[in-house]
Length: 115
Length: 113
Image (cartoon, rainbow over all chains, first blue to last red; front, side):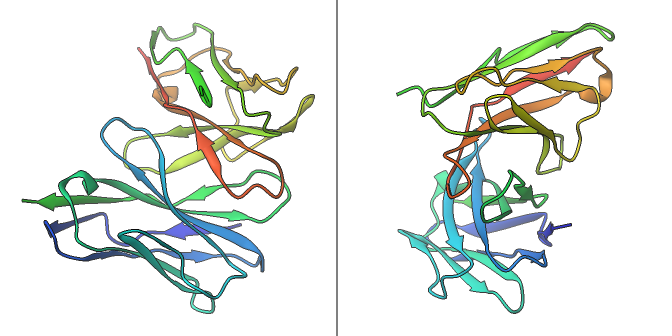
C-alpha cells in the first residue's frame, strides 16, 4: 500500500521569503503522479502543482516549484516570494498512473505567512 | 462552467438518520470518487467509480453506499448516520485512466449529533 508522509505539521514564513515543505512517499509503483494541493480556510482543494514520475525535470508553476527525488521518494514544495494569500493547509498526494482511482494524501502542513 | 457540484453544502443529521450527498459533474469525466476529511487528516477515499454502472470500495467504505447510473452523477448514501461520520466530504472527478488532473467539488460539511 502506498503511504505519504508530511513530517512538518506546521510551518511559518515571513512575507516575501522562501519556504520549503517536505513530503516523502512509499510505493512499489514505477509510474505515478505526485501533487501538492492547497486548502485555504474555505476548505476548497486547489491544485498547486503536479509532477509525473517519468519526467526528470522538476515541475514549476510561477512561484511554486518542486524538488522531485525519485530514488529517495521525496517530493518537496518550494514557495518563493511568499504572500499572505499562501496561508493555508498544504497536502502532498500520490496517485498511480492509470488503473483505478487511488489518490493517497499526507496529513498536511499548516503554513502561515506572517506580514 | 459548473465543474463538480456538491449538494448540500451543510447538513446536520441525528444519529440513525439516512441521507444522500449529491455530486454532479458536467465535464464528461469517467472517474468519480468520494473522499472524507477529518480534523488533522488528509482526504481518505470512501468509494469510487470508473464509469457508469461500475463502483468499488476505497479505504474507508463502511457505512456508505454509492451507485453510478449515469456518467454525470455519483451520489453517496449514508445508511444510518453515526457521530463518527461527522466530516467534510469531497467529490472528485478525473477524465479517465490517463487523466492526470483531479477536480474537486467545494465540499459538504456533515455533522451527526
